[in-house]
Figure: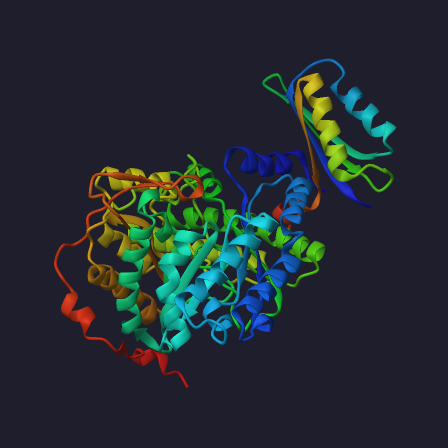
Length: 90
Length: 454
């Protein structure tokens, strides 16, 4: 399994999760976990996804999600899980 | 499983606190390029470096993208050129041609610096060592990306005072030859005591002869992250302070270790070390001096600075050592003046002097770094400053370095601008009393008594 963390941060609006999930479904990316909060009207979401089923290159997916974020007015970042795992787990 | 807050913390470090990987440095041995014909030597050097590093920049960018962390520099270090050129180079111009080759290949593979135009003369200078050293001013004025270093002493050998004397003059000449660019050449020239073989940071990186054919060394950064973490423990005691620095250093180093391992895997090159140094940049919020202020000093240079820096350096190592399987290089807090906005401000405010900086270097690497001094500083005074710094390294069994810029045609009160990561610096006054008779003695300072451990 190749785990990737997708973070979405920005002003809350209708359909953010729907748009992101649609993109992931269309590209064969499986969502393992979603957590989300609203802090001072700011939408803050983290998804843990499995990218082993997609044909997309990591870089292309990151670019397309970033572009989708721009369209919705939020910032979407894609990062491999290891950076968080290494930093926060001994 | 990783939670939202941990992800947010990491990304805040990257986006707001300037967390980055400062450099991935690919060390390449040039020992197998040695031959007795200069033209052939240059061809072999170019071919070996190009082949080894053609994917370095691309791979670095790829890793940066995958983990969402900037990897600021991709660089190369090579075996000291004085060794590689010893059989072929008969004149200074021959050595300069090697520097030209290094510069050309650095440009062709897209790295911003290549280190290893170096000589190791801690006990004595062979003919080729002296030839290389004498060629440094011309080599640095005719190239853009080549960095040069000279090891002048060590705890085991003492200090080569003949070489110290020579380097004072070489630094002056380098400043003169690059006068048009505010003596920029001197920013690419550093002298060491106890130079490490696996340092990934410029200008002092070279690939030691004890290293494998190729190796990946990574330098981390993160002064901004430490500073921000310390804001949470204002007014608390030293235990709380130290714990916070350790935990933060652990996190920063883990990122370096991850990037190093990934680069090693993708390039098929063994992983060498992670260098734990806190390396500042001129960017606001990326300053070691600001950490010292956060610890409780009004300005870097105020009484208490040496103690605060000692504590900081030690805690960074304690946190970092556990985060990486191999730690090496310089691994200490860097205190360059021109590359650290807080240091620049401290100098301008009159809080920080050359003498205080010297005291600070006795408790942290890496020495008197990126300090602009008046252009009329004599060669023997530069040698005297170097000798002092080498003595601190020799006696304390640590690495020390000197990277001074005697800015040609400028004096105290003026500012020099180097641009980019090298920053800018106010020119600092130098003690005006002479040490000429001391420097003119010649010979070497014997190794200190505590080097006899056998």
